Amino acid sequence: MLNQKILLAHNHYRNAGGEDTVFATESALLEGHGHSVIRYAVRNDALKSLNPFQVAGKAIWNSETYHEIRKLIRRYAIDILHVHNTWFVLSPSIYAAAQEEGIAVVQTLHNYRLLCPSSTHFYREGKICEDCLKKRYPFPGIRHACYRHSRMQTAVLASTLSFHHWRKTWTRHVDMYIALTEFGRQKFVQGGLPREKIVVKPNGAYPDPGVREKDEKGQYVLFAGRISREKGILTLLEAWKPLNEIPLKILGEGALTPKIHATLRTFPNMPVEICGQRPREEVLRMMKKARFLVFPSEWYEGFPMLLVEAFASATPVIASRLGAMAEIVTDGETGMHFTAGDSEDLRNKVLWAWEHASEMQEMGWNARREYEKKYTAEKNYQRLMEIYRLAQKRAKES
Image (cartoon, rainbow, N blue to C red; front, side, top):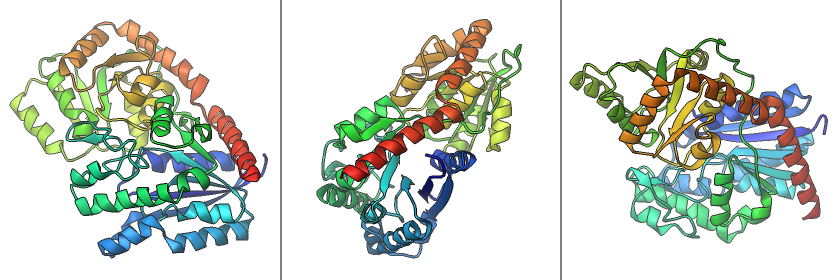
């Protein structure tokens, strides 16, 4: 499949995230293997000047992006459209545009937006919620105002999902879906996507972040991510209150940052340092000095790139026993599991891990071997090519 002409489409949210990273890295990976890559990216900032009805119209069917995609396919003789995110500006209209031009369509399922109108990760009021999982029209989400605490905005999402279920967009206009984990694949099958069209391809780290020093056992524990409830930051702080001799560095920013500072003023003996947002290069450098990474997320993550980067750097992970985290991190081999939201269980695991530095170091090198087996750029590329071939075969047969 040398010199394939690939159109990569992506809708950036207003705040940058892991999907943007994957879009950028896979674009560079494909170009590095000799493919012609055309990037078509939009931002949700374009919706600021629109009223709710105009936003709803574009989210359901954006005729502008439909026509632009058709033009790009013709101009560059595109072979494959690979979509990372359509919400909200791109809209699912671009699938139909590609199909009408006779090319294969691949969609990476970075989150659960096709199944859940709340926050993309089946999460409501501090706990997992699957009330809308099998519903063609997700009324529970509207009733609970799940998206941004707004029934109107949630109704926009719900209407988009229902319209395209009715139109059979998800089954007719996409040739192959990429789920990031087997856990994710099963959720999408439960939600009604065709089982035979969903394959698993985890994200890979590109370029390789490199490994820690061979004799580095780690000087502190590291948390990196958004400072918010769903990321488990409150559980983490509660676990740390009695841990007066285990240093913790927190990288990131978010709505709960002021609450963290207030907690540290109340408990001045907690050895916790708030480091704020740092560039990726510095996050990786600090990761290689950490004894282990703690990942206490309390919702269904898609595929946290941070875990792959930790594995690549030979840093073990203590993660919630939930969804993708439980699948990626192997308990006792590449890290440890604890019960999501259970601060006492997390504290016990942290204590054991800190006191058994040699065992954690070995888990870190196990993690590096797991990275080399599953998550390198070359593994990612090979799997991507297999999926493109399957998608093109399906497109020809349909």
